[in-house]
Structure formats: C-alpha cells, structure tokens
Picture 1 (cartoon, rainbow, N blue to C red):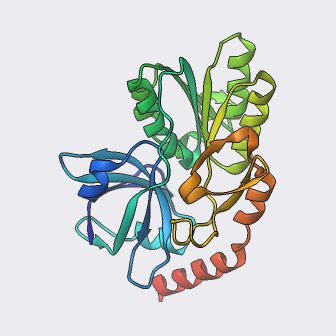
Picture 2 (cartoon, rainbow, N blue to C red):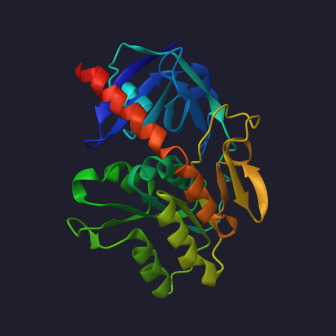
Picture 3 (cartoon, helix red, strand yellow):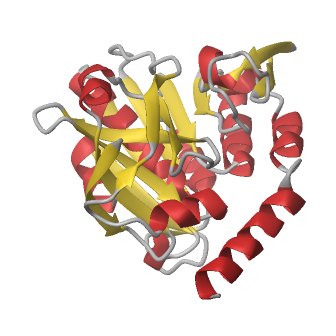
Length: 277
C-alpha cells in the first residue's frame, strides 16, 4: 500500500497529494499517469502524475472532487495508505527541442500540463504557458507554471484575474500578433481542447491534447477508453493519453464521457449519505 505523505488544497475542490511510490517515481515521464484504488472493492480511476521526487520515492497527484472515488480520496489524510497504485501508464509526452512551444491548461488540466511545460523547458524550448479558470479563486499552480515557463499568460472567464475571457482567445491573440509557434500542448475540459484545435488548425500548428475518457483496466484489454483519432479507433490508456488534436473526434469523446452520468450521480449521493449518516 502507498502512504500519503503530504496533502494540500489548491482550491476548494482541487487537491494535491504526495504519495509514496518509489518504483513509479523512478520511472515516470511527463504525460504518464497512474490508476488508483482507494480500497480493495473500490473503483479504478486514472490520475496524471504531476511531479515526482526520486530521492523521496514519491509522486504528486492532483485531482478534482467530481465523484465518489475522488471524494473518498479527498477524505483520506497524511499517514493513511491508498490500497493500490498502478503505473506509470500511457505513452510519455514526445519531448524534444521544437522551438517555441505553447502549453495551454484549463481548470484541473493545469496540473496535467505542468510537467509537460517543465520537460519542454528542460529540453531547451522557449515555453509560453496560458492557464485559465472560471475565476481567480479556483486558479491552480500559477507560481509553479510561471517557474516552468519563459512567459505565463492568465485568463479567467469572469475577468476576476488576468485576461477577461478564455485561454483560446489568448492563444488567438498570440497567433494574430505574429508569434511563430512550433507546437501547442493543450489540456483541459473537452470543449476547451476542441476550441484550441479550431484556433490552431488554420495555421497548421501541430496541437497535442491529453484525453481523459473512461478507463477500467488501463492495459488496452477492456476497450472502455476507446477514442476516434484520424478515423481509427485508439485506446487512450496504451496509445495515448496524448493525441494529435486535429485528428480527434471530440463529439464522440464528449458523448462517451457522459455515458455514466446518472450512475455517477447516484454513487455520489450515496457517498454523501454515508458520510453524514
């Protein structure tokens, strides 16, 4: 079992945990993820590895409370042990010196794009990062992203901080200014990633997105995480989670993500009743 070493709230619903996992910490690369179970009879959920500390033998995971399992995980404290962590899984981000790269993160997706920005900068890229949230009070990892980037641009939907609008608008302004962008990495809600791809497509800027479909075994056996990319079926757990955004069928992805909304709502309500019973 994996002991929780540190826990902190990045916002009201987003939590950062440092967890003991020496073998994973020694091997993980940017873009990879874990599959976690809080208890023996619990659900398996994928979570991105935001960082690692090889000396400490620990990994950092960042997650948002969106359902029963993430609520259970959020209820665990330092010193407690997570039942099972499997990883590192998925194909690592393709990291090389592309030139000028733009990393776009929305909401909790900032926690996913953070290790990518770090790795790109370490590889010699000039990194411009654009991060956004609905409002300032739920914006996460601003200082960490600033350190991982050569330039950081911030947007909030309500205008409470930074640019008043969406990250896609900030990217559009950057392109319109004549900035020559060699590659874009975008992670966030499906509508955000789709719009980012719409912005970059006319300019033929290769855009990599990280997809978060429903996963079960995370080994390519069950097929639950299938996505359509370039007209072909891919499995996000083994073929991804990163794909060329210009080839992703975002409409199908959004539909599949909504498949179990009713069941997830029932499970969350039952969890709340159990917590307050």
